[in-house]
Image (cartoon, rainbow, N blue to C red; front, side):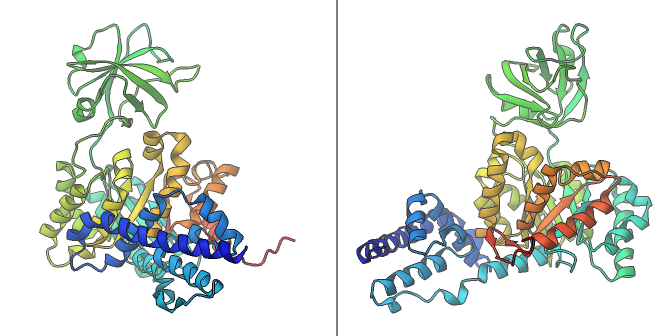
Length: 492
């Protein structure tokens, strides 16, 4: 590259750094009330700089930096301004300019990575020697009566267990936790207890099948009724209740409604007093779709003005606040949702509520859009992490986009110096059958970029834990977040 090209590149980087600093200040301004007296200020600052950087199209600049042997913007998530400073310093030296006027960013170049590790330890527990990635295992209902299950998890080095409060009751949860604590005492291996608040239940209720269409096919009409209004639906149409009226309140003609993790995709034709009438657009297959209760409903085109913390959640909180090390916050969408939960926890544990971990489950389009402010609102006051709830998220943003959004969430969390939980359908077929698929093993390998992976139940769970630990131990020698570590290749 010619000297004049390097000089032009240096001037361009100087101007870019100045513009990013200005834009970042505007991005971070609404966060300041949350950050007063918080140790999260530096991380929030880096997040604002990363957003300012990535609002620009950097592809041409990135290529020219690569040609000069200087590209590192593509790995700058946890250290935006230190990276800019390092590049500008080298360019200044190459142009025979005086670099001393630039601030020395070397001292804090890797500080973001250290913050991520510390926050992962605080929220999810330290990693064991088996793997560089923590494992969180969802406890099945049977774990309440099977103390040996928790002992097996502790023996295998599982760092955290998850209790889904949508199932079972306080007596069962107390038994599960007692078994976990006994397993810890027997093995000397600490396991964090994460309790999952159910949140608003946007699910199907009682179905009513029309005699002419016992199963739904593409082109069929379906009535989705408000709770206790299915009797008002014309008898000629198959119908099912929605357990949350607010979901139908927010729905308009033309909106999509997905049922059962997208197995049935519909579009709203009419809005009625009793609910909505939809047409089936995709999903049922040749055999058709059989309506069932207790299946999830997603309304991706509507924004639900529903508090994430429900009355049922508030009733569970005294138990959760006493026993949990961290809380999975379902359906969180706004900073107000975070504030509501933090206020409720402060009432229950006024002296030390801020020691409870808070895991933000990103499940909806609105949560995705609000992710930066959600992270700051949570992490400014307590240990926090982000769960990529890939099941609901895929239905919300579309299966074609879920991989892209997963990557972007990983980048934003790294910029905010927050740990990530990689969740939903990890090694699902292996846990169920003992036979892995190529796709799920690749997916599981890429989970090494997160701080924690969540596994659900299955008869081959313990074998799956061993396999995942082995896989991540190897992959962890190759990758750290987006960076390739350049371990020697041993296959050739």
